Image 1 (cartoon, one colour):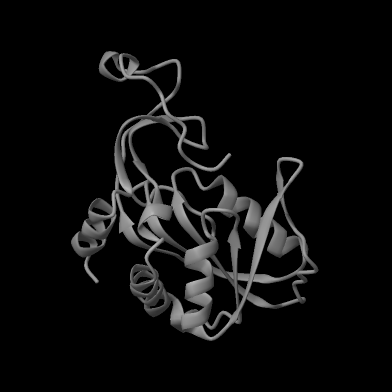
Image 2 (cartoon, rainbow, N blue to C red; image 1 turned 90 degrees about the vertical axis):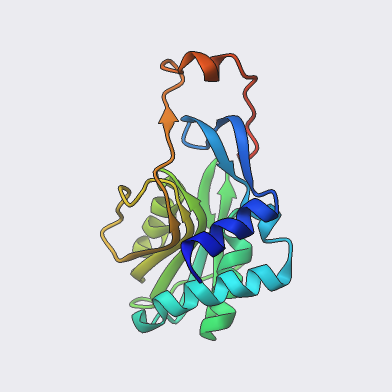
Length: 188
């Protein structure tokens, strides 16, 4: 799939929103990717999951791990496409942790899958969980890289779309954005 085909999936499903948004990172933006809107259709999940799996297959991951909530649908589909195990990290007292009896074995080759990254905070938390369990992070894969390739994690990173999306500190909003009511549509 080309980036333009993938972008059309997001536009066609209403997953690419325009307005004034505050991101999980605290930054403000004119655009927001609500990937859940695109990923509610299983044929789309299968297509995007296959596209991600094709990019990362050579890494040899035996397990896919995703941060909840955004990465769950895509992560599970990538794991299915790779025929690997799938686990996820979820919030407990504001911090990502492994729960539900999930365990990571020493040396286990793990791929982190997320829907969207801007600064990569949740991905980094997930990497830290894997490393604390002595697992091996072989790569990171995302549907949308809003950093335009600027965010790095010290492992190979793959994205279906890489865009430079303008973001602003809350105290440095341009006048046109200040005039629009702010929305926080993502997960908290």
